[in-house]
Length: 352
Image (cartoon, rainbow, N blue to C red; front, side, top):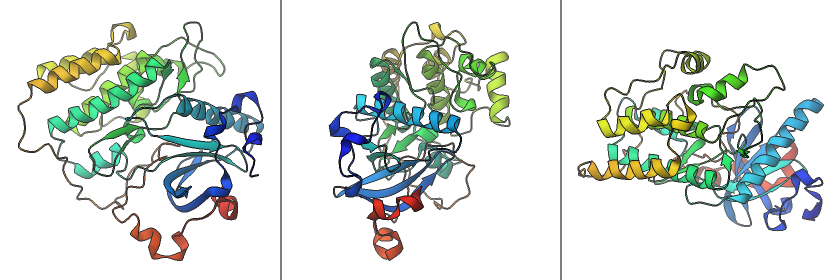
């Protein structure tokens, strides 16, 4: 098992040797997240604090193939791009189980951060600063021909000081080509572009054209949420929200936004994908808007006040990849023998 060459036995899983994780140097600590397809643990790799995403292989041949494909895509994307606003990829291995190792971010998801602030809103400078972090990450992905397809607050993780946002979870990301048609596997309905939702209604196996502008739509919904600190399409289920956006051209209200900001948001969620700006344009518009806002007394993000144990709606699979949003991280790990990192080989069967 010590040799890395056997971990990616097919061409689909080929990976540069520098990204191959040696499981013997991987130590697993407490679980920090769980979804339908993966569990995520805090741990160490070569004395570095990391997040360890252990992907369930599935039971049926179809499940196994789908999850291996998603795992291969995520590894390929993570190893291809590096940016200060993208979660840092450390490595992966396929055996004894599928594992993706990334930097450990201790600020929690943007979703939890906003929930813990309600009913208060972010300072506008902070909200636009976060939006710029997200837009720069997306600009980087798009410059490499990668569509994220699942941009939402659950996939955005804060650094421990709550000053920077990083984009995570490329499990649904796809490389874009002009001739390729996309499959109907898509992201979370509430933030999903109308043209993406219409692919879900296709019969299994059918395909439909769409492009990187699906991410601009999702960004608009996230930006609206950053400013209002409310759930977009409140009062609707995820499916109702997607249906209303796709077939009735319904959008959250932009009436109470400042004019320049409303212009950015509404341009990004236009029904015609080709009319939406690209992320280079979005960054320039945000920077211009930021320059027009009077400087606040303090641009520090508000402190969290709500307990981390507050009951939240379930998160979607795979997005907890990098979140150990615990105020007592470190102390907890040292406090009990149960939470001490253990050899991956010792406990991978339990983790899996």
